[in-house]
Image 1 (cartoon, one colour):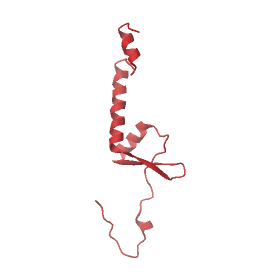
Image 2 (cartoon, rainbow, N blue to C red; image 1 turned 45 degrees about the horizontal axis):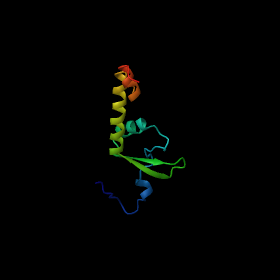
Image 3 (cartoon, rainbow, N blue to C red; image 1 turned 90 degrees about the horizontal axis):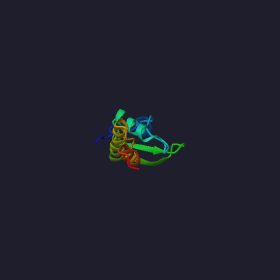
Image 4 (cartoon, rainbow, N blue to C red; image 1 turned 180 degrees about the horizontal axis):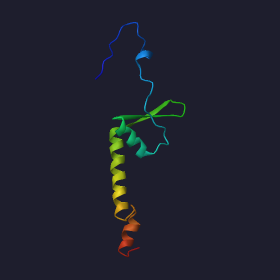
Length: 94
C-alpha cells in the first residue's frame, strides 16, 4: 500500500497522475489484456467517450480472456477453427 506524504501546502492536483490507462466499452478484449500486461495493471478502468468511469475489468477477467484466446488459437492451429461442426466434419460426420 502506498501512502501519500507531503507538505501541507501541496495540492492533491499536483500529486495525482493524469495519464490514466483506460479503455472504452468497445475495446477489443485482446487489447485490454495487452495493456494490462504492458503496464502491469491488475484493474483496467472502463470509461465513456467523455471520460466518465463506467466500470472496471479485473485481472481475473483478463486471465479468463487470455485462456479463451489461447484455446481459440490452439483450435485454429490444429485446423479445427473453434467450431464443433468443423471438428466433426474432419471425420465426415455432419
